[in-house]
Length: 64
Image 1 (cartoon, rainbow, N blue to C red):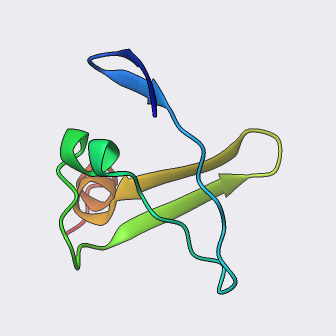
Image 2 (cartoon, rainbow, N blue to C red):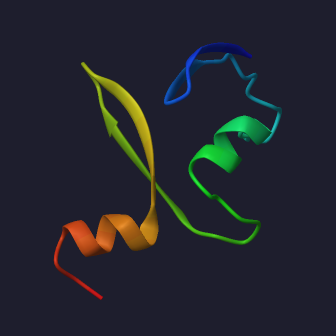
């Protein structure tokens, strides 16, 4: 993993045969992602893909 600074990084991951990726441990620590948590996958054809913790997504949307 190439670290940019304490709040940013760039990393490459490979997509496995089932379409799965592994979130690097540094990213899981930075964003406090625990085993079993639900993530939202958001995509825009022009801008790319983003991951967001589901509880944060729903709080931003004013739900839950």
